[in-house]
Image 1 (cartoon, rainbow, N blue to C red):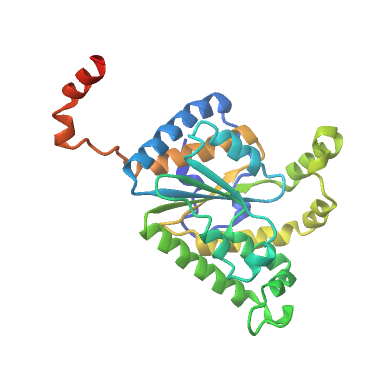
Image 2: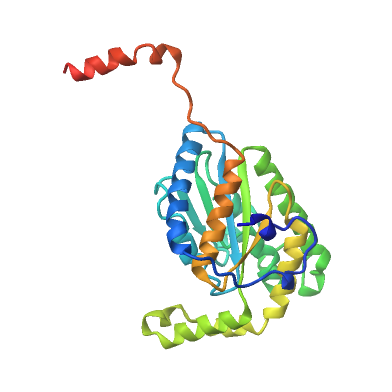
Length: 284
């Protein structure tokens, strides 16, 4: 699989990326990759030098929740921590826009998964600038004070934030689940047609759908301005869920291989006495 084609390494047009790719035996292959991810995380934990922040963004119904469940289900439960960021709380609004994300970062040795991320602050709020007013930012008195420069400045601060993380041992990998508008329609209809899925549907889903083109423009700008060497974006075709999960898992495994995690070696003092310790246990 050519994984480089998913990576944003130059200025892109989002429309040039496929929304559907079907990989043969995707579910079977994913099972193999899950085991590899588990072993990688164990080594990462034992070495204790790196943690990983995996950011997942996408339109409503892109499959974020099920992808996280399926990709990371074999990783030690204490080795992966998932945070789903909703509307900021009253406490979170009293801090800067990155604060709630900073305190949720993974410790060294662990995989941290952000289901929706700090990029909501330059995506949803750009489509709905009135949300910014709730942050009580000095000199922002109305939506007329919020323009493209405001969001581009935020993106630059996000770049600085991620650069700081990378330099201190956090591997930052970001994924945009690229869903087609037609497939979103099918998934919303499925929520309405299946009683056990009804609870997932909200009238707000249809209101946001009408803003599809605006969201796509915002995502394209974000991908172009914030995909960096130490914190790259990958655009994953999301119309076929099993294939999307496999592609993302494959990218994770290949990216983690670059770090060649290793378990620490026993000290010579302990290694020289291994036979003695075995004998003590066997002779109990």
